[in-house]
Every structure is written in C-alpha cells, then in structure tokens.
Length: 129
Image 1 (cartoon, rainbow, N blue to C red):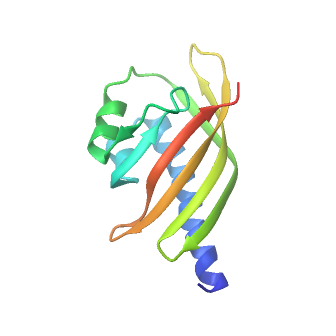
Image 2: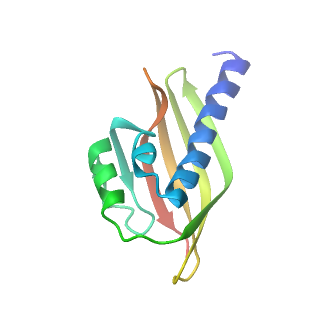
Image 3: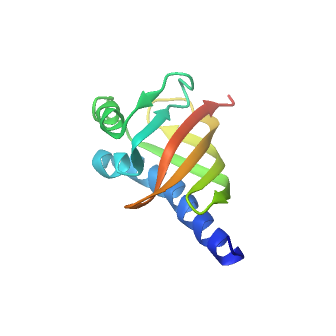
C-alpha cells in the first residue's frame, strides 16, 4: 500500500465517523444504517457488550428508540489502514442530549471496503464517565 492509498483509506474512514454523528443527530436512520456493512455490528456506548448484528437490526434499533434532540461530538479520530480492504479506528465521543447529563466515551471501529465503498464492519462504544 502506498502512502497516498493509506491517506485515502484513513480519510474515508474518518469521514464515516463524522457522518455517523451527523446522521444520528439528524435522525436519518436509513442513511445511518447504510454506513454499516450488511453483516456489520454495533454496540452502543451505554451497552458495549450488547451487540446489534446486521444492518437491518441496526436500523430497527435506531428507529425504535425514543426521539430526542442531541449532539454527538467526535474528536481525536485516529484511523489506521491495515491493508487495502481493512482499517481500524478510535475516536473520543461527547454526547449532549436534551434532558440528560452530558456523557463522554469512545468508539472503537473496524472498517471494511465493500462494493459500495468503506463501511463500518464493527462499531463498539464505551463510556469513560
């Protein structure tokens, strides 16, 4: 993998992290679920060991949660390309939600290149406090 290929992979994956936050805040669940590979899995920061498996199940999980106004802030995003089709990443998360105490945590991500571009293969959240 060339340095420019590595930079391109890391850019695409970092964009997924930011796009996830924006779509989540906007309540665009179909587009958010589409960021995951069909067999991708997701664990919320409040339940890091409770996996939601598959894009369809992820969509259902977001559609069925109560509506709220929120802002997900992502920082310290670091992506490492493993090879031309796989990458890993970590980012810090702050969540500000109406009627809730602010929380801080992180996401640990695995990314995969699909025929539709880069997707989350796995997104696991956790809370720091």
